Length: 241
Ligand code: C5P
Image (cartoon, rainbow, N blue to C red; front, top):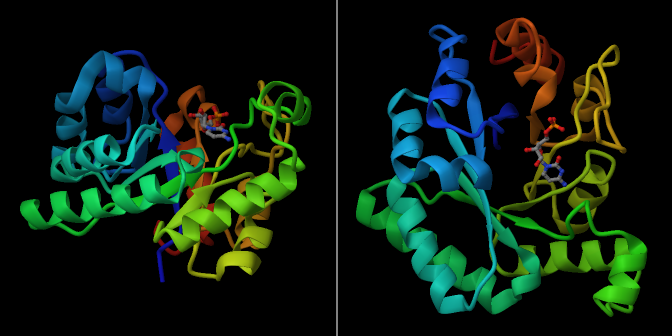
């Protein structure tokens, strides 16, 4: 069983800003998500520095290319020592299987466990109209998302990124061990910002989701450490405080 955890989305644009933010957590080492913005600015050295400080890292680069290229890229990400990474399920099963192989190869070379691999089904920025009229995908959004999640499970992936509102259904369809990583988390007394379908950490816990990704509710808080601890306690019931 995976331990439930809160992943902080470090949506900063430089290494300095990110490390200064993480310094505010004292001896505590939260699980962090590094996305394209920071990775393309600060690169693998930045990721190594965060790993060396003792954080676990979800590298959110959403790979999508031919199977051979994705396999080789994943091999390099596994060598880097990240704990979790992701790709677009739209790349197809062969690409997803190649990605798992690449991660396993890189991890074996580095003498580490294979990083978890999570699929993005459809971006939340894709609307139902866009799916039908622009991308010419004839199935409904829910069917497309469920189908892509099932393709990911069949390809040996560990789980998907989804809304906390979908986590229980994803697990019912693909098994309780199929991981769900859920953004869109807000405190009941916080601002929704640009997120539409939000949920509190307490409610997310009740859905059975494995990881919640929390950005601005922590990064924009006056006291990020106490916002993080509040979130962790609400989501895990205090087990890893
Ligand atoms: O600040 P906030 O908590 O809204 O940040 C959520 C994080 O999760 C961001 O890094 C965002 O890119 C990411 N995310 C999301 N919705 C998705 C996938 C990823 O909000 N469907």
